[in-house]
Every structure is written in structure tokens, then in C-alpha cells.
Image (tube, rainbow, N blue to C red; front, side):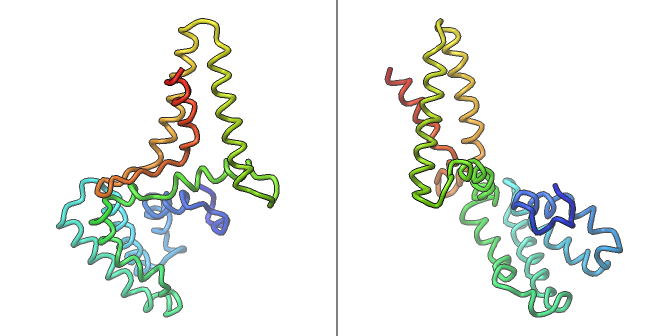
Length: 201
């Protein structure tokens, strides 16, 4: 996580880390937040912890709703009416999203944000960016297949396939599955193509 001075450059994952873990320690310092503002922040942090837990009960959700309502209600008194944006108001509805989709980690877009850097490397101009990404994915698939085909004996091919499948499954694990809707969110589906080809051979 980068320092607070570089806040405008933070990625969503850094805000995630700060909101759930680091912020509780860092913001406790009296030079950063007053005691009243720090206690206000703790309402937000505690509610988030409940929303990412897979074992949160209905009772926990009632506590979470109360924490978020208190947080949003006190925002204008502590930070002014300008702080009450649509995003801040939307926090009140997060418990409803939890009931519908499960833990916020199941519907998180962080894996997509992390993969965005790889996609940006595929695009070299503003002309047909989607075509550039598709071409890059095709070349990546070909390289993986060639690496496996170049191995002389069967055991080396199997090892290469296992390594490739481990890399893919690691990326797929980062895409979450909503326990209620069963929808899959795969950031690297293009890498499944080599496996399908290998199975067919």
C-alpha cells in the first residue's frame, strides 16, 4: 500500500486494504482524525468486515444496517452536506446486496481491476483496441500450446500442462462465484482455450 500522500493514485485494492485493516490503526492517531471522527470511521470499518464475511448471520446484518445508517446520518454533521454524495447514500443499501448476492467479496471487481493492467499492455493505439486484445490473447494461447508440444516425452508435457492449469486456476479463483445467483466472473477466460484444444487432441 502506498503512503497517504499518494492517495489520488491508489487502486481499489489499496482502498480495500486501508478500509478493512490499515485504516483502523493509522487513523487512530489524533493528528489525523479527531476521536469523534475516528469512532465514526469505526462504524464504517465494522460494517465492511461484516459484509465481507461468509458466515454473517441475520442478526449481524441488522447490526451492519444500523452501523451504516449511523455512519451516513452523521456524515453531514462531521464533514458537511457536500460529503453526502450518491455513493455515500448507497452504503445504506449494501446489506440488501449482501442478502441478494452474499459476501461482497463474491461480487468484487478487484480481480478485473488487477487484470486491467495486462489488457492495457495489449493495446498500443486507439485504433480497434478490442481487436488488439483478442490478437494478443490468441498469440498467448498459441505460445502455451507450442510450449507443451515442444516437450519430447509425455511426463514433460504433463508437467507443462499442470503448471499451465495451475496458473489458469489461480487466475480463475480470483474471479468469484456468487453463491445465490451462481454467476461466474472469470477475468482470464481466454486462457481456457488451450485446455479445450488439448483435451480434443
